Length: 166
Image (cartoon, rainbow, N blue to C red):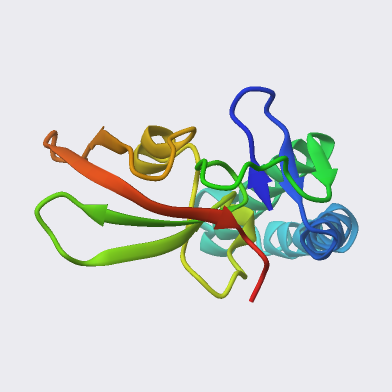
């Protein structure tokens, strides 16, 4: 499953689409009903100002509603199948190998959406600082991105091949 920045499409494998759709269906019906029952039971206990169970249930309700909105957004913009990819060019759906400047260690990961967290290799989002910096680069090119501490890091693209699953 991958995302493209330009048109906000999320490319999903059929398996990932089905998994997200099932989660949405569960949360929209059963999840909402279960949390409503918890809230009602907590209300019956009396004073809501000092009712920890009520406040915890309301917080859980907010998380469920947030996840429902997130899933709806992903699925509305989803396309099932393979993202368009060009061998040797970094993009969503590619297995990428990089080397950090000044370090001999190589790192290989899948450039894809966080929703592909079930992949057998590490997944980096195209929207992350590293993902955004290398997206569109060709093998042999270098890219520089900012670290959270404000420093810059440069990487060299060693390989970019279509992800074939694991």
